[in-house]
Image (cartoon, rainbow, N blue to C red; front, top):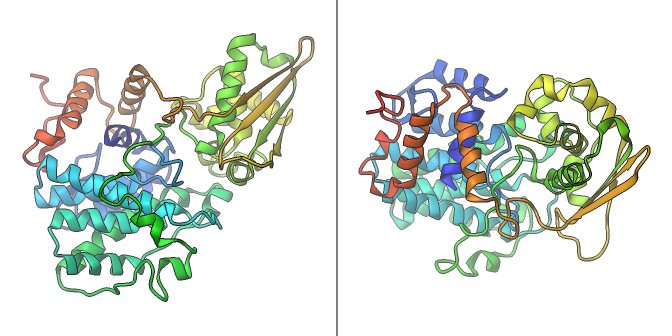
Length: 425
């Protein structure tokens, strides 16, 4: 999972929002404790966690725990790797912290199913980042409780940036990563925090979204949330993946000529419609607009037979041929018993001479029920790491993959990127 997250972050280093936040952090500078991925500069651990967190989230291509509705790795990985480099931790110590953080984020997210509009990745991720950081700092039980209590004061993040297609969407998980690291560092110095950060009178569940603490304790220490993640097939909000897959299958199976299409009907669950069902309008942030528009995603699949990183470029998003297909499409809500948050999804494509073609998808691409192949995952890694601020050539790419795959054997995580694009000896 870390392999996938770091790769998409590598590509995300040049995405809108990632550039500006990195430049801001570099202007502030500070003690060199952790490395900016794909850049090489070193910053304080808190700043590195933030910058790398923005890059990891920018392309919406990261893994997601669908059952918990949380993108935990884009919070936990930037936080854990930053602290691990600061502490010169071993690869095994880093992996233990990463596993702990992802488990906590998933279990916390499972305590509530209200989905009232909070961004679960950030409101639960800040506690996960604090816990992972506390593990790497070797905090005591009391200090760890303090770290979680301090993290409570940084809880935040809503779905409003997604609804408005703003670049802030890319920052929310990074705010959580930064705050989690800071919380652990402050606890290490003796700053106290409340003990009821989750279930207290004014804790997470009381003030943000009602939850059942029993769901957190269920399987704690025996069943981990690190299994069952969905590895994204497309660099967009997961709510649009099923209809995008349906469009790809129809286009390939029936050789549909986009010029022959007279109408496209897309049916989504209520939750999916809330995030990706609004009318497509590129606006000031065309990349974000594309990532959160099922109309764009389906149109790209039908027009080009693909939806990858190249299809997030501004000229691809604003292609007049896309606008023409979008104008023929309509999105409706499918609300019936038995629906989960994202599935099923259905599209019906009507053509001028051959009638209508329909496809319903009830398994999310990249999920444990419909996993990507090893070849797909390798291609995704290669494509992502060949982009960004410092694209990797094939030799450096393979070197990074081997280091990440064998990170448990690494004595010092601070050397993870050392000589990556060296002499290839």
